[in-house]
Length: 292
Image 1 (cartoon, rainbow, N blue to C red):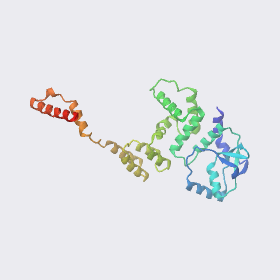
Image 2 (cartoon, rainbow, N blue to C red):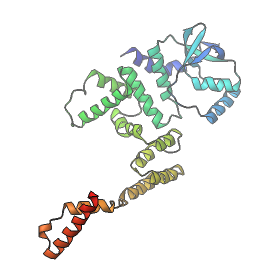
Image 3 (cartoon, helix red, strand yellow):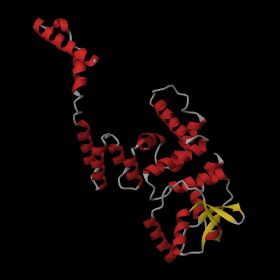
Image 4 (cartoon, rainbow, N blue to C red):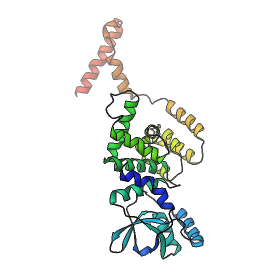
């Protein structure tokens, strides 16, 4: 097992350890975090709790020189502590290199209770990318290849490899879903149109509703259905509405395209003489008109 995975396994235990010391907030430096947003209302609630009870779970930090410590896990508690007016917080100081710190930060982010499915999908992909030494897009391609091999669609040359083993081990470590379920239910979230992605990130619809709405390409129709989903329309009813929207007849093609298609199929020789002459007369007039 790699050092990264060993650290990941010990993250919960490290977080539960008693604080080894306290550090002034001024000495702590937030690192670029995987998470995208901090809900202000949630932070305010946590700040109220900290005022009443203190910071109950220490932050995980690592020394970065010049008396500064980088926050590996616990930036939300750090921000709430500042809101609460604290001058110092309990910490557990770890000796961790950059790669391990990044893995710990990703893992801590994936433990958040308010993590939305889109953020979770990106977090899992980034954790896999770090473990495999690949870019996020390459990980997506690897997962699709593993799925296709598992289904027998393509010859086996990835399944059973060390990379596939690392993928399976990361998902066992996370303990949330299998890699197969992730490919089927979460990777499609990467291709959501902006309106659905925004709704998912703000938590106003579940990811199952987002995947249903993704089937509707008409933006106007989708906007109306999205509003209903945000208002609490049950998933079962939403699926019915989506099926109805997809069954709506397509608008007829422009008349000139329809005429051109019918002319392409026309066999003049099979027409009665009088009708054939009438058609030829109009075709001749049309050719002259188009040539002008």
